Image (tube, rainbow, N blue to C red; front, side, top):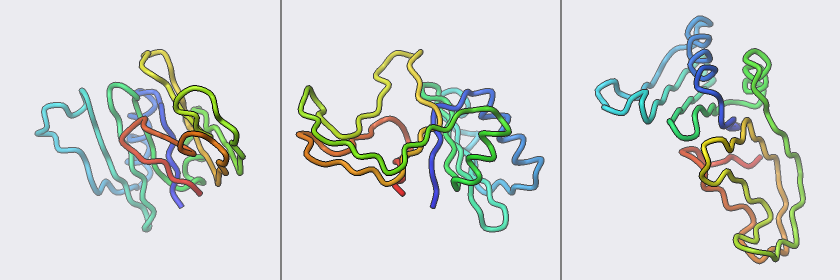
Length: 146
């Protein structure tokens, strides 16, 4: 199963690309250099090694994201010193306040200094909330629930 780490600093993001290339990961896919916004507004890379895939996406608002196996994300997090937040089997219930009244509501809203880095959520249980259980509208990736 793949997981997504988000909010990875731009310098670290591009260091991860360099690291993967140096460690025999094959670049299978790259956002086309002919696109005017490459590296300015958006960037994307997909690497493969022995059938394992790592997908990296960057944009100028939320910075870097890495989609990979949990083991690979932990390895990269240790090597490049970015944090992974773990929420395993959390129960979120009874949200009846203001919108979105959800069990899980992850933000930042709009301020550039608001960040969430390396978020991982495993098997959340949401119940008895007025809103949806887990509205997530942050980025290009959809979250993967274990």
